[in-house]
Length: 277
Image (cartoon, rainbow, N blue to C red; front, side, top):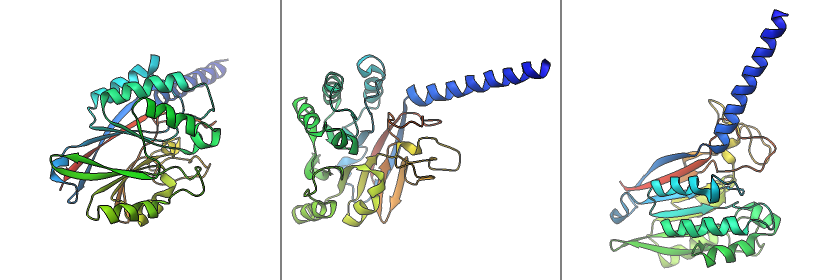
């Protein structure tokens, strides 16, 4: 009888610990600053703060995302970058996303690139229209110039590969930028962390992306246990990396659409702080 009681106590204790880990990995927002230093960053952009939101998957943090918006506001971003997978269903997301987009654009200029799920579920084009109505700049294989203190950098964005087959490639986009602004420091917004080789080969200086959900389960000594393609021990799933001369910041994302729950993997809000080295 004592052994049976001890067994049930252990089971209950494990269940409590597991539930606490799940709750922490689902609701506790983690804001992390990453220092990005490069001699090619103009001096006028010293301390410029780019806050990234990725892979929301319609997750809601408090009523109308009040906790998420509070965290964004507290981080004092100069620019907000949304790197895809805000939604993963065709309809039913409009009111919540409209409220979020309106609130974000009131905090800082906000830019968006598509993820694989928006295209897969058929919500991409309606989402583009809604975001633009609320003041979000949708970067679909195009670029623009950000100016500060008489100096400038280039901000570019690419559609997810689930988009139209005839769209401009990252290499073509980079070549177009170099024709117009050959010496500009280029920041790329993209969705897939699995395409980092492509972005590096295209010659971008700094890329922000998501998609990997932080490897879903974050075990010590790994970059996550499994990726969104159900491949084991993936790489480049969360944090700051250097790849073939390109700096890349990968968000672990905010939500999840997999059957496997996030564990030891809090919803992630990365903030890149630029430094003129």
